[in-house]
Amino acid sequence: MSFHRIDLPRTIVVGGGVLDKAGSYISGVAQRGSYVLVVSGHTVSSRYFERLRASLEAEGLTVGLKIVRDASVETAEEVAREAAESRIDVVAGLGGGKSIDVAKYASKRSGAVFISIPTVASHDGITSPFSSLKGFGKPISRPAKAPDAIIIDVDVIAEAPRRYNIAGFGDLIGKYTAVLDWRLAHKLRLEYYGEYAASLALLSAKHVSQYAEEIALGTREGYRVLLEALVSSGVSMCIAGSTRPASGSEHLFAHALHIVARNKPLHGEAVGVGTIMMAYLHGKNWRRIRGLLKTVGAPTNARELGVTEDEVVEALTIAARIRPERYTILGEKGLTREAAEALARKTGVI
Ligand SMILES: NC(=O)C1=CN([C@@H]2O[C@H](COP(=O)(O)OP(=O)(O)OC[C@H]3O[C@@H](n4cnc5c(N)ncnc54)[C@H](OP(=O)(O)O)[C@@H]3O)[C@@H](O)[C@H]2O)C=CC1
Ligand SMILES: O=C(CO)COP(=O)(O)O
Ligand SMILES: [Zn+2]
Image 1 (spheres, helix red, strand yellow):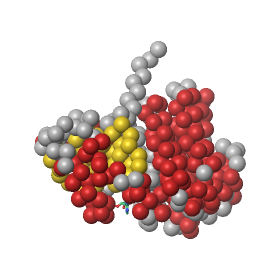
Image 2: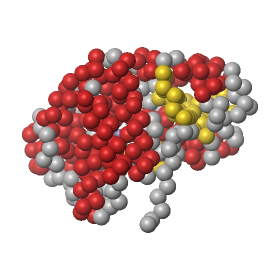
Image 3: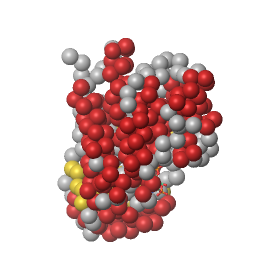
Image 4: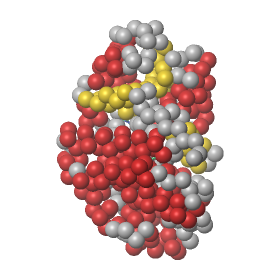
């Protein structure tokens, strides 16, 4: 049997106000005197960094801050270099997917402990052992490491703009088609397929679908369900050893749209709309996917995404070329312009 290694997150703390006790929760992975580099964005660091710093310093840790604007390969390499040169013991990602991906990559490259502290429920990179970076004209997924600790303050998540938290629902709905694509690649290309990882990813999509109305209301219960599902979808990537269970043709569309769109939608928003169209191509109930997205108030068409019809069609035609090694329902050559336009019209995306 071929070698397959699974690294899982070690400690997960979820609850109200846990940001102020972060230092005590990471004492198992970082000793007193350790140097912690917090990687964060402008908005998030101005709101939450001082609270995090106080809680870490209270446990005898030394704390620094690195503000990042993007999750490009260049930024991730720069932070990794700084972390290695300054002999950082712990890298903590505080923020959305961008900050967490850069921190995760830097911790892997520098050999530091990695702490994931999401401030929005917008993506499942919270737990995944991969960093999705932008570079060389297209997105790339780099192996990084599963978090040594994840600290999720539900009060912070509840304060985040609703649009970001609803995007997390879109990222999760994407697992319906991601898993279909993975099975297809297994059948047509004999690609490794793990039933357990696939089932776990699918479970996260089903779980949030069942609670769509609760999530729409923005209740504590709704956030709890959303966060549980994001964490377990990330675990499915740990188990699979790739992002396959969580990323298929709907993600290729989202990545392509990120490249061509002038106004870039959120990752999870684009994934949600991609899922409607890819479910149609798979012969599945795409109207149900659209209905679920509508229930939570997520975008379901180009106008709501803030992109043009032409950008949607363009993204559909280049999607298969974004990651040629990842076989999906889009096939090897992808869609012609005519087929792309017909698909987007048929599903009401344009
Ligand atoms: N590694 C993986 O497996 C995965 C990675 N991803 C990646 O994650 C990214 C998507 O993540 P997403 O979070 O949508 O995007 P970003 O991290 O790009 O954006 C999040 C935005 O929300 C702001 N923000 C975060 N928290 C708060 C808060 N509490 N209050 C107010 N504003 C807040 C941030 O501000 P600021 O930055 O200014 O602080 C930032 O502008 C994509 O690059 C995607 O590829 C997605 C899924 C899985
Ligand atoms: O977004 C992801 C899973 O939700 C990660 O997938 P990618 O490999 O497409 O970057
Ligand atoms: Zn995603």
